[in-house]
Amino acid sequence: KIEGNVVFTWLDAFHPDKAKVAAMKVHYQQGGLGDRVCKNELETCLQELIAPIRERRATFIADKGMLMELLKKGSERAHEVTQKTLQEVKRGLGLPTLFQV
Image 1 (cartoon, rainbow, N blue to C red):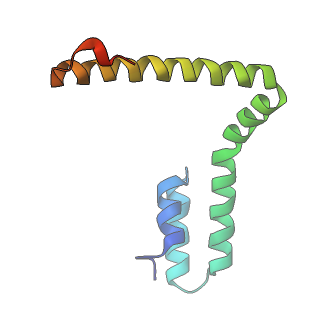
Image 2: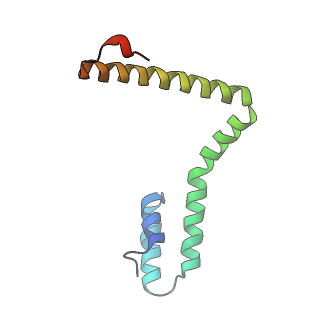
Image 3: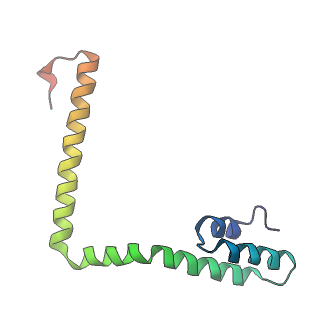
């Protein structure tokens, strides 16, 4: 059964070759394609999808200095945004500036 089959749901969502997925569905419904083949296709698809993310992660892991700098900049930016939001909330609530953080 195709409907409700999680493997085909994921293949529909992530597989770049929609025609291949459609052909797999027909073959599966006819009983000529097993679950293992479908799962292997999904695994290959997902591995290819996340390969660039893994490569980028490896780059960051290899250069600890760059990683720490990125984390520091991200933390500083997050602090700026939260402070701005906090000030807007205080103004909106009419709180005095005495409570500034």
